Length: 285
Ligand code: PAF
Image (cartoon, rainbow, N blue to C red; front, side, top):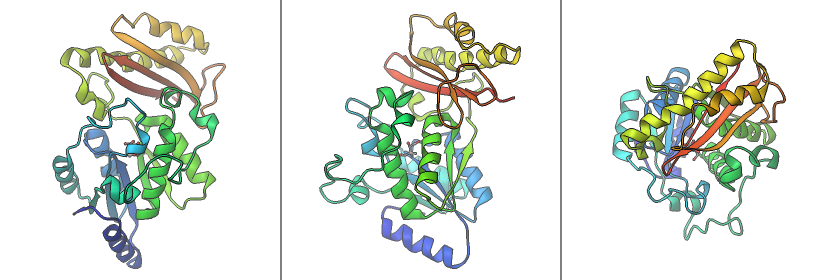
């Protein structure tokens, strides 16, 4: 069922809760692919009712980013959700989410600001304010849907860690379920932004997962020195790859690692043409 208003969602959820049913939420920005589908399947299996939100959240896009051209495919998204057993697809307008005249600066809107330590690194460094927008909208979605469980992909690992921190710090009564990255056969992690890649760029994009798998294989042979592990990446890069970061960070709090260990997650971001891609891998055995 496709719903556009907060009131209608609330009505359905209220009824479900009265019946003692559990509710799962899968927050998305639409352009759904198999990565989203795995989140949805997890929710449908675990929860009595599943709500998928489809909302291209303007306040998490930085100036100059792809807000206007971000793929919007609501009809296909709704079909995918219906076939997967989703109960509600919640697709609000920006006006429904942020109000009449929706002035989206933090002079006029209450924001949820995650701790600086979590956002001054990795994607937060180049996407200033991005995680404020994510935490604000996710918080709103939690308040609207009041889910028992919410499902997020490990593809956006920094986002996932920040959301877990927010839920813990603000005592939000929801359990965050982390779902593994879904990859193409080539290793490329699924992402809505892969749609921007040309065929040759898509072949180039395999380098992200190659670097990560290579690092993990080297770590598995006993190499824990981070510079040595990083060196294995550089031979895979060429002039078509504009590396933004390759970092070894703690799985739980994103602090920098001195040596690679079981709690390390390796994060990479690079640009191919105009498309910025991210990926990551846990070094846990
Ligand atoms: O990961 C995303 O698609 C978005 O950041 C999210 C969590 C749906 C918030 O807009």
